[in-house]
Amino acid sequence: MSRSLAVPARMDAIDLARMDAAAEFVRTHDTAAALAAVLPTLTIAERLAVAGRCRFSHTAVLVFPHGLTELSGALADRGLVAGPSVPSVVVRRRLAQRHGRTADRMDVRIVRAPVLSRDGKHCDIEIFASLPTADPDSENIAALERAAAHEQHLGLAVTTVDEVEIAGLRALLTRRAGMHSDGGGYNDHEDLTVLYFRADATDRPYQRLELHIAGDHPGMLSAHLAEADDPRTRLLRLLTGAWATQALSATAALGVADRLAARPGSSVTDLALSTGTDGDSLHRLLRYLADLGIVRTRDDGYELTDTGRLLAESADQSLHPIALLYGGAFYQSFAHLDHSLRTGRPGFDHYFGSHHFEYFTATPASAELFDSAMAASASIFGQVTDLIDLTPAHTVVDIAGGNGALLACLLRAAPHLHGILFEREATLTTARPALDRAGCLSRCELVAGDFTRSVPTGGDIYLLSRVLHDWDDDRCHRILATCAAAMPAHAELYVVERLLPDSSAPSLAPAWDVHMLCNVGGRERTLAHYRDLFAAVGLDLCETQQLPMDFTLMRVKPRSV
Ligand SMILES: C[S@@+](CC[C@H](N)C(=O)[O-])C[C@H]1O[C@@H](n2cnc3c(N)ncnc32)[C@H](O)[C@@H]1O
Image (tube, rainbow, N blue to C red; front, side, top):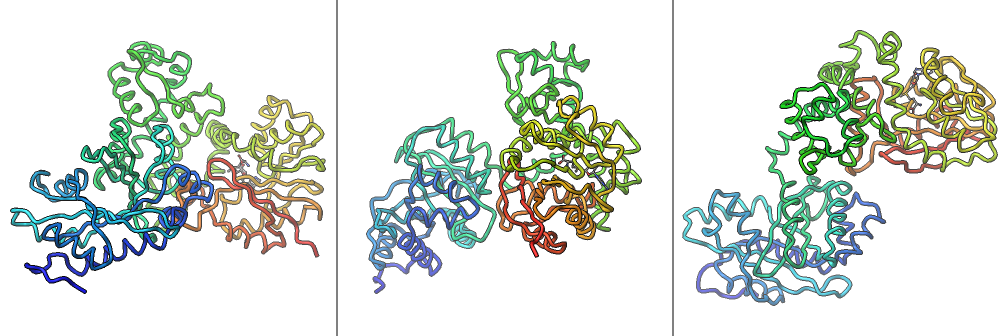
C-alpha cells in the first residue's frame, strides 16, 4: 500500500517500475545467469574466466525523489529496506557533464537496498537518487534522464585487485564481448573505483556493465577513461582509418619498422638518416604511431611494440607485405566502394580495369606482393597441420594454394607425404622457389590448371584455403563440384575460411566481407551458407575447428551412397 506523503510524490511510474525490474532481475539471477544475459557473445570458457574474478553484486537505477524519505517509503512499499546513503561522485559528475552544469549544482546520493539473488547470495539494488536543487531546469533534466536511462547498469564486484587480471577482464569485455568504455571514476566516500562499459547491442537486459573494484587505481582508471570517447570523437577516430592505413603502410615501406626492430631505442635523427626521411615529418609520424600503439618512447628514442614489430620485414611471421598491399592497390580500389554498393561489382575492376587476379598476372611485382601477403598469414597454417590427421594420407592436393605456404607446412610436418600444388601458371612461377626455400620442392608436383574445369585426382587430403570467399555461389558450386569429382570416396576436403558470425559477436569477417565485395567480387559466408554449398555438390560438412585470426577449418567428406 502506498504511504501518504506530506508533498506529492516526485518519483513517477517509470522510476517505480525500474526499481521493481531491478529487484526482480536480482531475485531471478545468479552470477552465471547474469553474465549470460549481459555478455551473450562470450564463450562459456570466457564467461567462466569473468566469473572467476567477479561476482554479480547489484543492478542500478537512477530515480528522482523529493528526498531520501520518499525513496525509503517507496522501497518499504516493496518490502525493501534502504541502507545508509552515500554521496555519489561519479554519477553526479556524469549528470552534470551531460547537462552542462558544474557538479556542485547536482545532488545525487547512492542508496543500496539488499536483495537476495537466485542462489541466495547477498546482492543489492543500487539506487542513484537525484534530488531536486535550486536549478530551475531540475524537472526537465529529470524527464530527459528518465527517457534515456543512461545510468541503468548491472554491477559486478571484482574479487581481485591484481591489475593484470583486471586488465585481462577489461580486454575480454572490450575485445570479445563487444563493449566499450563508458567512463567511470573513483568515489572517495566509499574508496571504490568503478569502470563502466557499454554495449551498443539492444538485445540484452542491461546494456551497461559496471566493474566495481575496491580501492583507488588511478593508472587503470585513466587508461579506461581514455577509451571512453563520446560518439562524435569515436566517429572521428573511425573516419581517420585511412590515415592509419597509410601511416602503417609508409612505416613498413620506408623501412622505419625494420630499422627500429634492428635498433630499438633509435633517435628520430638516426631513424631519419637511415631511412632517408625528413626528421620533422618522421617525428610527427612517430607521435601518431605511438597513439596507434605501434611504437612507444624509450629514453630519448623509440621502440616497436609487439604489434609494431609485425610491420618489420625481418619479423617472424611479418605482416609487412599485407601493410604494403592494403596501403597500395587495395587502398586505391577501396576508394571505389561506392561503385560496388551501386552495382554489386568490384570497385577494384572499376578502378584498375580488370579483375584483381588478371591485374596481378599482368603486373608481376603486384602478383608477388599479393602472394607474399597471402603467405603472411602462415601463422594459421601451422595450426592447420596440428588439426589434420596426416598419418594415413599419402598425397595432399592444395587447390589454388598460392605460393604453397600451407602445403609446405603439411609436408614439413609429415615427411612421408607427397604434395600437389594446383594453381594458375603465373602463380606457380613464384611458388616453385618458395617451395624450394622451404625444402619441400622434391616432394611436390606443381600442376597448372583452372579449378572450374578439373583438379588432380587420387589425393587423400584436399585443401581449399581462402579460395571460396573469392567467388559467388555459382562459381563456388563449380569449384566444389570439380573437387568432389576428383576425390576418392575416402578422401577429405579441408576448407579454411572466415565465417560470418550468426550473432553480433565481434569478428574480422564482416570487414573482410566488404573487402571481398569491393576488391575481389566474392563474399564471406556463415557456416550454414557453406554447409549448403557443400551439400549442393554431394559433400557433407563433418566438423569445424577454430583457427587464430577468426579463421575456421571445415572438414568435408564426399557423401557416402
Ligand atoms: C586468396 S588466394 C589463396 C591462396 C592460398 N590458398 C592461401 O590460403 O594463402 C586465391 C588463389 O586462387 C588462385 N586462383 C584464382 N583463380 C584460379 C583458377 N581459376 N584456378 C586455380 N587457381 C586459381 C589464385 O592464383 C590465388 O593464389
